[in-house]
Image 1 (cartoon, rainbow, N blue to C red):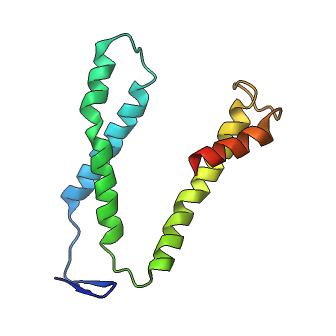
Image 2 (tube, helix red, strand yellow):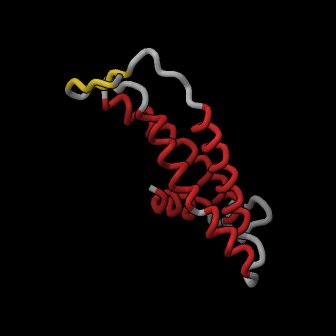
Image 3 (cartoon, helix red, strand yellow):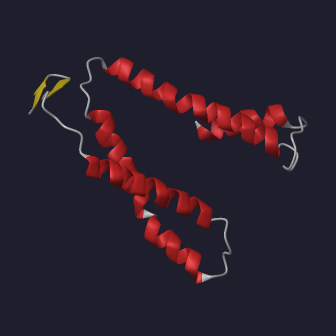
Length: 128
């Protein structure tokens, strides 16, 4: 039972976990891995294009399932909700941008520090 009062959403206590949604989410994760892996395969063949076409809808499905899981809990204060989820996104973004720039600042393959500062700031600004 779901009732809305202003900005608060109250969910019923008797809600049980739906394992079919969890299995769909696992399948979507596998499809997204296949999508990323197929991007680096032989681009001249039509097989990998077919794989990308088949597994690409898993991106939208995974995004919808993530929204379902995030919004299934009651939200008391919207400011705390946004701040908490924004931190969960920004920390990995800054970390992986740092690693990416460290690796590719002079062409990749090793960890040079040549153009690191300028490239890191530019990549971070593009991502945000």
